[in-house]
Image (cartoon, chains in turn green, brown):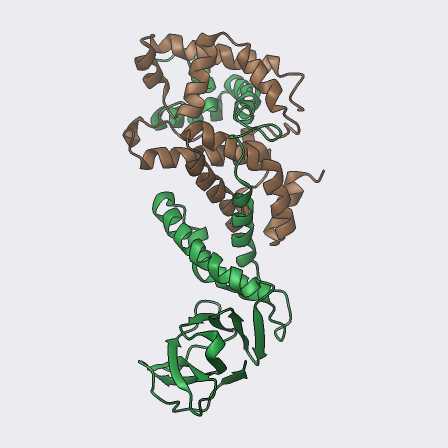
Length: 236
Length: 177
């Protein structure tokens, strides 16, 4: 049988988080019934919190401060999961970027199995950062159409669409490009909207050779020529 | 400066500016705890990111009390999860998480000067300070500390409690209660 002094030692260890799970559970039960031990716990607990603060860096002490990029990374994730609050007809670059991040990160944010998830997130973030850099770059060209925008930056070509419903079963969306000087469109990628009814697709064509981009609904696998009226058509 | 509890109310309403204020105020604490536990700056950043995304994705987890104490506990527990994942020792030997019983939580600690805390810790006799720091940041139980040091378990327990009480008394003028 543990003496009360020994129990007080355990209360200190409990506050410090150094008891085994079984001992911690026993001590927690004891605290429910012993006012003296509760008093000891209340007294010691701020010291435990202070120990945590002892690890906090002051000023710009390196290496005990995280990199400046960490905040940017976190705030990007946060903003990507923030509900949109702009009118539906406005679809600026930052919304494209936020939606882009939201595609892959929302699910990960609630999942804290760190090792696997963080590796995956890093790869996603790297790819998405490249897309975001293009979409938000001041030198990117934007061509709006109802329901989205086409972006070009140098030779890279993107189509971004929002509020895009899932197509009927057996159908996909297909992008088309019209080369400069050509009279008929050429087939490009097929795609489906992601969560949030957003689609951001990097097309493989060289943007400097493209005069127009269109999107139509086609059978799964795509078509060689559009079989339905385009739902989007933009000249660039 | 807006009180952390009020900021968290705004975070619950998906206010990114409030979240940013929380980050600015507490990221050094979270990262510092993670770095002390993991001794790995990259892993500590990963933990910091995970902790703050947890704050954002599930802000109702913080109910009341001292936010710094709460988030430091989350950071320590998360860092220990990473240590567990590295399988340095078996789950059964790992200490329990810091208690999260809000009814017994210290409620204020509005201002803590980390340098003063470090000074107060430094003034403890090594035989008291070392097991406290090893236990808090090292993720080891009292039994493991006793085995590592060759001291009787009762001695380790008493030294920890004595050191913690001394620290608490030394911080009386530092902690804003």
